[in-house]
Length: 330
Image (cartoon, rainbow, N blue to C red):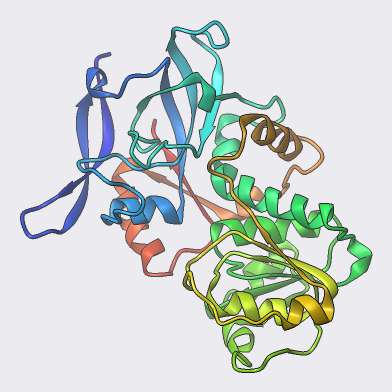
């Protein structure tokens, strides 16, 4: 087959960006060592930014987003991968300036690829995708900083989102008491179904921005939203607690002081899942396929086709999506 279906984002004459499913030629894909027939992808906030013309994510259009892909090798010029190998790709430049997982074929450098972990089917791997990898990295960093289930309640902000929902489920499965924070009304049942023992409103986390310190509440936190909420969480950590920071949906800036750091000895831990060395990604994927396997992935995931993807992109940009969106490329 020399052609395939893909979501292609074009900029029109008035500067609007329009995602449409089109037929593309495999010959038009960028150079790379491995050609992959993509079976599944997933929708992340960064994909929606790319699809809406955010030049900080994607510089040139027309473009196919999709920072995640799972599929089968069709052609390879390197010995590490052979036709028939099942592989996953998350991050690096996939879906940013390299044609991404919202197409039935991708061609990428072998240095971006991992063979599918034995404990995860391709479909399960994309239920997790970059969101699951990021959630796992956050939990790993918190545990490296000394967090244990006995320390107290762990807060997850943006808990109905992709990273947040998996973080809630993962922490709960590891025996942690989890408080799930969300700005979406009516999601208590969903969050408690993932394992949260407490649901916190976004308004509660936004209170006290002007105060230098807040009452100690959380043993640790996974923050997926950023902005002033992030620093409010820092100000309400227990002594020696840590926040793993991995998102920016509430903004990239916050008002800060040194007081939480020097009075309570708290830690702000940055988490990157894009340019992470492949060996670290591989170890985390192995963990997610075995001892950290999330049992209730299906309850937080809904599946869409390529044709249904533009509507899902609109939803995630409007802050209306809950859980994970799995993209089935047929």
